Amino acid sequence: MKTNGPLALIFHTVFVIFILAPLAIVCVVAFTDKGYLSLPTNGPSLRWFRAILENPDFIDSFWISLYLALGAATVALAIAIPASLAVVRYRFPGREGLTAFFLSPLMIPHVVLGVAFLRFFTEVGLSGTMVGLTFTHVIIVMPYALRLVLAAASGLDRDAEKAAHSLGASSFTVFRRITLPLILPGVAGGWVLAFITSFDEVTMTVFVASPSTTTLPVRMYHHIAQTIDPLLASISTVLIVVTVILMVVLDRIYGLDKILIGKN
Image (tube, rainbow, N blue to C red; front, side):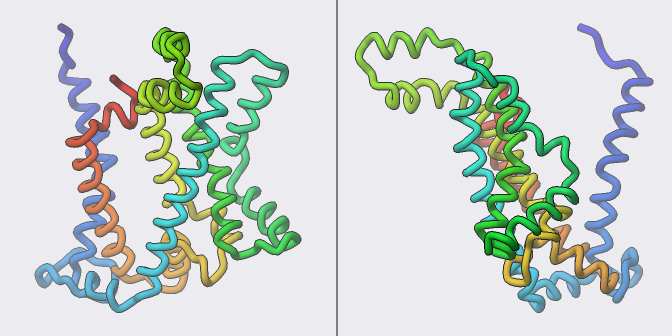
């Protein structure tokens, strides 16, 4: 078995430090007792974590982001599953064009999408609504859900499905009992990536959100444009800790390699 040499180990170490250092600094700055971004000098303080509870707007925006990400990821996956199975299993005119259409949001800048949707929603009366916001997020997260489901469906062995059909099982039963469990790693991975993408989206959401549908990233963006204080560092620290806990739980229950890579 080949092992990494000293140069490879140094490179990987530097790369990991480069990725984790900004997150570590944000977490450290969140415990400052000063009114500006500064490393703690007088001992750690929970001042800015208490400030989160004193700003209900951020808490409301968190719940909006959570519900939005849950809805957008679920709807995108509900579209991605049948679309992926159709593209993988059937040959029909426009097949490649359909795949390109679903993946096209990856090639369009979110600023352009934001301006376009702002104009469109203003005309149809959906400007600033949760329905319109969910619709836009479904479009931008669709490619992430589709790619992983496509990868899972492409390597699917259909012998079990044919055997179930020959024994009299309905198409829905075959899908529920055989097809879906076999592509579940891709489905789970697509949903997770779609959820993360939707929850973190800010560039396009700035254009289509309203004061009543302001997501957490947009709220943070507006806050830092007005003032620079450690409040955003404390919010970011809470999100980082929650994310790490969820990753550990998912890894223990299901395995991150199965969810994110589709490894069996």
